[in-house]
Length: 343
Image (cartoon, rainbow, N blue to C red; front, top):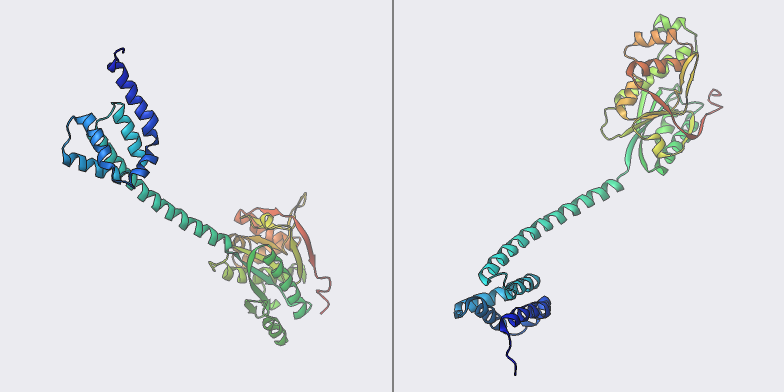
């Protein structure tokens, strides 16, 4: 029988043991946990690494193997059998890895909790509807029932767009108080701003000297709107203000078109005579909407009316002074009630 070259055979044996047996150590150790074989594995490894281990060392490493993770032990045992790592080094590395794994597990748990909290917050925000103030301003024309129909239609339209409308009615106190009772009893108006009619004799002479009727109505329109908007804009609940009239039938094309942080309105026309901006309907953030209708003083409003050729010019003057650009925005319909003057 030929002799065996042990110097060449043993390294191959170690590699064979490491590659054939111990890469499957996870499964092996699962079996070992069911049987009292930890001491046998520890004794074999210690004998190979240290020569003659003591019983205390065997007990120590047997406990280490029983408590360690299968993957770490498999890698460690493979390295020991290949001669790259001593058992004391392996124990130190395993202790360090175990500690690091515990820290990572703690961080992972905290991260999971944080992600869960953020996910819950996002779901809540997604489920929360954006609150918008809806201002209906002007006289109850031609009557209270007609006004209610326009309020109800726009309110429902905004709900279909995924918004939560809070309605405001800003009007002049009617001669018949029963008209306001009809409005409030319908449950469509959340807030009422009813002012005493602004008499002609209280208007500045510049307004009275301007085109009578139209410009006096424009004065009242801007006065009423400014009074209402200065109150509404202070309410922190509202993300936007929808500024409409009591006699307007309006339907927007989409939420994204209108609720985008700009001053959106149905019509903006530019010609040689200047820019025409619709003063019947608009959507803007609260501060911007209030600023767009803030004429300053009564005297300043009257001066703007005196040099305007049409009521819409006054709004453009204020927008220019406030450095606000009106944006023409797509709509489905925008119609004034043809019977608004029939009362």
